[in-house]
Each structure stands twice: as C-alpha cells, then as structure tokens.
Length: 234
Image 1 (cartoon, rainbow, N blue to C red):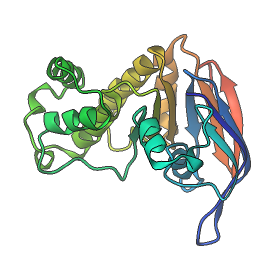
Image 2: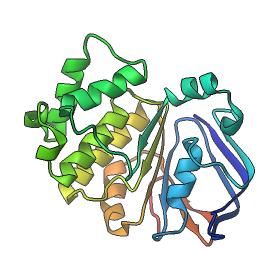
Image 3: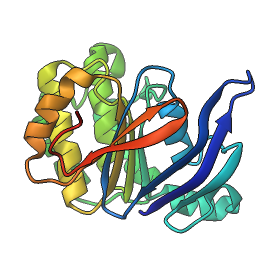
C-alpha cells in the first residue's frame, strides 16, 4: 500500500504535540524503518496509519484512501489487508497458539485448507514448533511476542505495521523476526516498523543485504529521512 501524509499534526488530550506539520510518504512495497527515542510519537504515527488514532490535522492517505472517512464496511474491507504488531495487543488466553493464529486467518478472510501446514512451518522456523498446542500462559513473554508477530504476518497483509516488534525478544529471536519481515516485504507487502533499540540496527542492516529500506528518524514532531538503501542509518 502507498502511504501519503502531509502537514500531519497530532496533539494529545493532555496538550502534548507529538507530530508537528510532519511529512511522510512510502511507495507500495516499501520497507520503512522509523527510529526514535521513547515518547517521540512513533506509536502514535503507526496507530494513525492503522486507522486507530485520527490526526488532529493534516492529510493522511493509505492506499489512496482517506481512511478516517471510510464507511464501516469499507474500513473493515481495508483492514483485512492490514497486519499490526503493537505492544498492547494480546493473545487470546483460552486459545492455543495454533488457534490464535487460525483466528486471524478467519477474521481476515484468509482461511484455507492448507493453513495448518503453513502455521506449522512458520512456528518451526520461529523455534516454536513444539508450542502449537500450548496456551499463552505456558509461553514466555518473548514467545508470546513472537506468536503475536507471526499472527500479524501469516495472512500476508498488503501493509504491515510493527511498533517496536523486537521488544522482549532475545538477539536470536529478533534476527528471525527481522528475516520474516524482509521476506514479507520481498513478497510485495509494505512494511513500516519503529524502534528505539538502536543496538539492533547494525545487525539488521547486515541481514537486509541488497534490500531497499527507507530509514527515517522521528524527533521533535518531525520525520527526517536518514539514508535510503539499507547502507547506513548513521
């Protein structure tokens, strides 16, 4: 999905302005990495892109649509192509890992007869092959975070929004998840992720290889381009 944002401003009810006349754009199939300190507005921006938090002012179009003026049925259809990895999302406690992932396929209209095999392969690659029938309470916090990420990617959304997706993951799991994100992007999905974990980006740039990534920094309410083409975010 293409993203276009002009004069984007967001003022919270507390009076804090987290976005101030910001500009942001991404072509369909882009991989955008947003770097910023804590409480700089990264989460707010991603929630705006996901239709969850309306801008105070400005223009925001995703897939050429003004997503905040869509009718209910139109927005539901649009959301079927959007995957989200947000810190405040949780797994269903009464469902197994496999059932949690199957549920999102049903909601997104992507259920199929081969989904069991696809889920098993994905869990195996993530090192969670033995956890398919486990309940969330039997998983570590890092394992729960990984399952939430897999759930957001399994249906191959046209747009994936990942807010600090490496939080709570060890270095190995973070590398595995980043590889999944690169594969999803290579298959055609637009990926927008944010992080404040600067220490991971050296390894991330190495793993990205020739993949084209747009690196941007969010600070003082503005979005600044850093360097395009994986090379460096320095």
